[in-house]
Image (cartoon, rainbow, N blue to C red):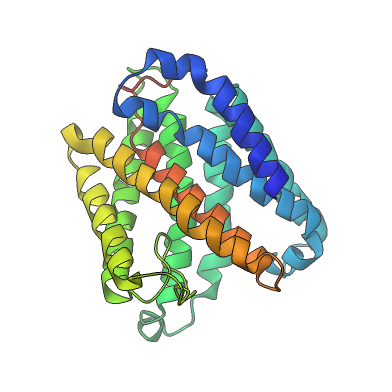
Length: 287
């Protein structure tokens, strides 16, 4: 996973430079969204290849050949990562990636809803995971819309729909940070913030405030780019200076894979926020 992620990072930064030179201000940060997306996708693709037998248990029981589907998803993630890094056929890979994430929500996340939904409303983790995959899908939708011609109604619809849903999810995550500051920030899951992290509640509230700013900003046309760029950058820094050190401390423990997954999850969410700032009026070149 580490090698795959670093390879995508290095190649992506090299290949994105021509487009970065043509952009300015917040747009330069936003154009890094597909690169960070590719890094996370490459990491998870590698996990699907090298830990396939562990992951195949997640495949719905009604699907035959679970090992095949595990490898299939890995190949799909890798193909999307290559497309985003090379910036080729993005108009195909982005909507297909969105479809993949939506299928995960429909076939894996939603079936876990119990019969008595009101009781489950108190299950924070379920909703956090479900909207996480939904956010990933919507980020890919925005990217798909951003590479279509500017006058394309389909492109405008994809961008606006995906962006609005990401905004709502950012606000939901912000509230989770304020209500449960003892858990790790970014994507608010069940992991408690390590005891060696100073002022964990302050950190959680700061990330929550950033997500709230992003959620509101994505709904205001004039604030979209700065909201997405600033919060996306915050989440990238959170990945580098919070989750990577956690992974390093857990590298030689049974929690190593979990630590790496948190790195990938947070980076993918950071990329999703950055992608939310793209649009048919932005400098993402069509392909």
